[in-house]
Image (cartoon, rainbow, N blue to C red; front, side):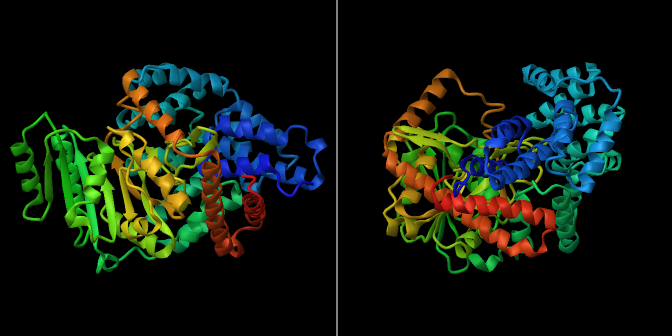
Length: 562
């Protein structure tokens, strides 16, 4: 038997990155892992069956109306038995859906995503559909679009369906994300007991600061479905004291951002910044050659929002681009003696404790040079826009990144912190002193006017020997809403790929491989620490499942086989 099962380690790493693996990924992973098992060493075969069947079971939780996947999970139960709680849910789901019109899930989701990007059109299709699978697919499309009014209307119709108990547990998480406690509780009351229902109840009581009950419920969810791997980090990080305001004392911190032609949006960002806990941080703002309003208008707006607080305002005659504006802020005389520096985009809304959490991360995770947030889309139903990223593939003049948001639906899977290759640049904190000590270069002017300059800078941090950390506790609303309401033009995509092409030629194949190895090894080491902190408390089945994943990933990282 080989020391490391590389395909198994690959799918484990992807599953941890996704938080929840959607049906397509799960099916692809299971197809690779469970095919030709008779050719494998018995120990390797056992490991693949244990992980692969769990991957499929977890995927069915997300799409419980998928009859094909439900049948496959049932068939594979003989190879790797489900927990009693999961088996009971599977049986109850089959009973609820028996006799209901069945449609292949891939066709239902294909039809839903082929609809125009218009919430009213998707809601109309939802109301016209007779098959529960089509209705559920339309509801998931509405959830992805982040519009609660139409999603709630569709859910209200779905609740009257005989199939509602099967899908209500999933949709209750949407209502929770939208802050609609009444509909959330109605969905929970209708839902069949399942790991997703237990997970949501755990999230609810954790938000109410009942940590002991939350911990017990998270353990119950893992006992019912051990493939909920993100809960290992969550359990390990639960109960950490919130970063106190004193963490900012005696810190010389700068905060800077720049804008072009966004007056009100920029003023909203400034107001959000000044309303958050930033201690004595110095704030600087560049008007990057805006033409949509006058300098006087901009200055008056800034002064009105600042209401007497100091904001250093720089008015430039032309747009010098994002990298140059970042460097200008970085090298301001007022920022030269700063220990830490935070860059913001001009279109973000910040949680109150963002800076305190970031500084806490740097204090608790040695070697951290950059910390960034969970980016969320604006809207009445917040969805995930950007989380931790890694290299998906590298080679000679080749860089491909993992998805910025593997799953936009929020089940709490991205609320933890972890080392990673790169974080979202809309609100990230840099250790200025560490950058100088390590020789991290400035933001590259070749990426003007914007795009990939922050991504490339994170790679430079790792190359220089520093680390980047994602903190999912910090949820920053990024109003640009890239990829949903603001699709790029052909010219804009050309610009993005042009800058990506430049970035690919800045690093050798060996440098990229070295950075990739370092980032994955750091992430796995963090997972190992989390597992060791909670292993004794885990239910036996979860301890076996998670332990297999941890050992496999640890061996793969040591052998550079991830």
